Length: 93
Image (tube, rainbow, N blue to C red; front, top):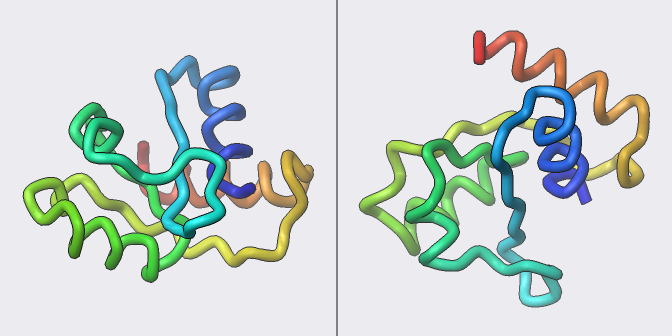
């Protein structure tokens, strides 16, 4: 639930209009063509996610930014939020 944590955090604290989606079959909200088209930027937690976007939505691959955040955090964990803020700050967003 890294993406959900990021979406909720940045919507609340940075006042971004956010959505989150997953690439796995069991994702609560799967990545969809409309979501990808809607996005100005697509922040992927891992390269695997970015590769999926690039393969399935090649016209939108220029929107993809890889954060390199491993899947080892609980939903809305303090450590994950700190890492997200640090990573986004390093990107000069």
